[in-house]
Image (cartoon, rainbow, N blue to C red; front, top):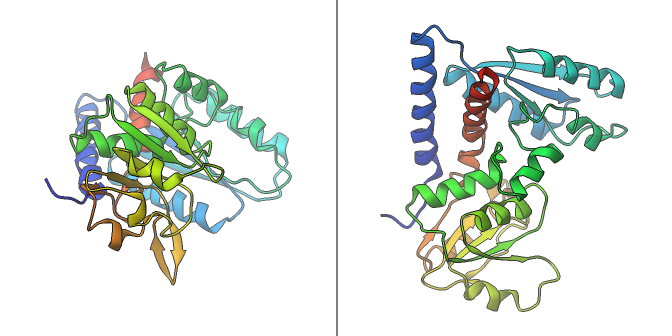
Length: 282
């Protein structure tokens, strides 16, 4: 196997599995999953992401609806729209683009989404299930990391894994998913002492801090497996948290940016919608 963990190839394999699943349903006269993605305002990153969701979902045979709302929408009105989607039996997955405009209670709005339709694992109920190792929809970026490792035949049980970053979106949930796979996990952050030494002793390093080229060759060894979650703009190019050119020469395996973790996130979101559809039917 090569040194580069190719997220695009793994994503394409999963897309083919989703296509086959939906095609079989259609042959049986059953409907495909339906996703509704909510965008409040016109945040540039969110606009890009929702358009990409639509493109991928439709290409795989899903039904997809964009709910585009003005940034000055009243909170009560937004909550009512979410409640209507919750009660709509034809809707399997609800996605809320974040961040929301100022003045809206993000936590309250997120937790209005029905946990059975929360395919992005944002609600407290689904996050609680994740941390209790109970069955739930897995958050897409953390799940992308686990999927890249497992589909590259990298054993997680018993491995020493360092996660750099403790965000609620990536760092904490991926640490929990790794624990659920029986890895030994160390979470590091800006206050961690002797970070280079901690990283050098790890089998796997997951870095998700949004600092371009932060992780250099001084943090790794020849057996390191590096998962780069960062996506920052540096000199007009999308750049990860790892100094790829230096680190790639030393380590055993590494994900590129772009073409690594980010290549899977939307695909796994669609996969969650297929699971939600089955839960909805049962």
